[in-house]
Image 1: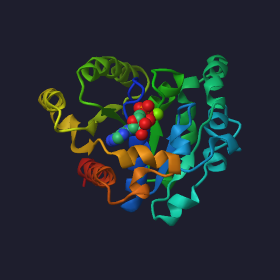
Image 2: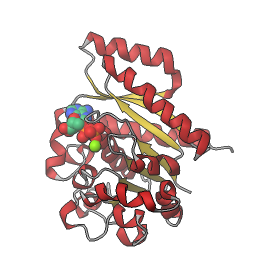
Image 3: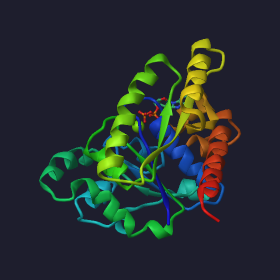
Image 4: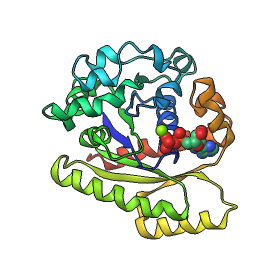
Length: 264
Ligand code: ADP
Ligand code: MG
């Protein structure tokens, strides 16, 4: 059975999509079978995985409305497969923005993704879900099927403020909809050790959240920012870059955490 993780933070531009596609590529590189689900109508994770969102025949939208299965809608990117970092992609585009409204009338609306993933779950080691920057019905669908949430955050003053809202939402989902859900960890991203404030916030995070803070730190690295325009994750674009190496290390940390948490 796959371990399902949401990459969530209700703020935009904090590194969710970069984390999702690079962790997916990093996990694939270390031999894991991965499905990446794009739950953001912006479709950045889809494009960043080399799939043209405008040309998608089927997407996560069809899966949520139950007009297609995951097996029918998933695609692969040849560029990633050729690089030895191939993962399956359940893509998204603007159509997904309509799902929010269309689903209001439907029953089990927050569990649609969970139901759909249950059919393919045995084919993967990891399912990674890139969430939109909101605590919407789409994000709720992600949280309802996940075992855990990975929260990418920049070590800035306001990062801690936003975290409280996310933690509350996760608590509510845990209490009412999904007993499995917990925060797996906080991932420090776009980190620049030369900035004193970032060091201070990083220390505060460690003091307050202890082992919920991942050991791996993702540095600010321009190669990670350049990669999406080439339709590949940074891990594929420039494997030798500091950013790519950090994400492969993070992928291994995730694999180790999962193995440690399994009863023998
Ligand atoms: P989100 O999905 O949370 O909106 P993104 O992953 O799209 O955030 O990242 C926002 C911007 O920051 C993008 O332009 C991305 O390329 C850039 N970025 C993300 N992580 C890094 C990093 N570690 N180093 C440099 N740029 C980064
Ligand atoms: Mg994004």
